[in-house]
Length: 149
Image (cartoon, rainbow, N blue to C red; front, side, top):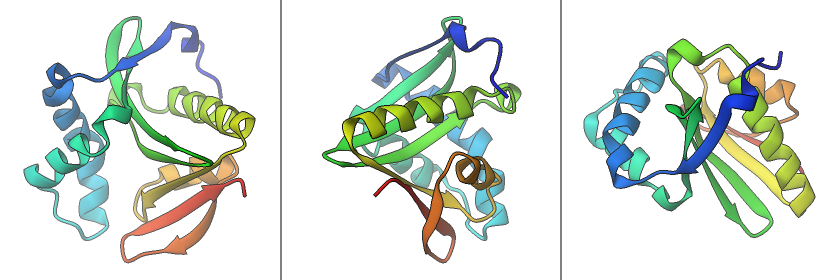
């Protein structure tokens, strides 16, 4: 399902001023999946994940209001979707799928494969599979997934 509001989406580079929003976003979107996976969420883990590859972080805006984060490392021909998180009240409206479909098209045009990891307890895995990703490796808590050669 494509959201009727994708035309109101825009993106901008994340800045230091966004860090508190990003920490809260991670807490709201990932803590339950981490606990269900047997991991204990912590402030240090949140901070580490938010700051990792921060130069790749883009704030997702809906009608100029921040609703999420997408972080993609475009390293050569092997890209990595590091994080995509959308505030819970905007999940299920098609925004994440639309963003990932556009990322897939961009990667394919660049001749790049696209990888990601997803917690085993995170239902987002089903979205990734619907979009063509497949599991290439299984860790203790995550599935490593890939699309493209």
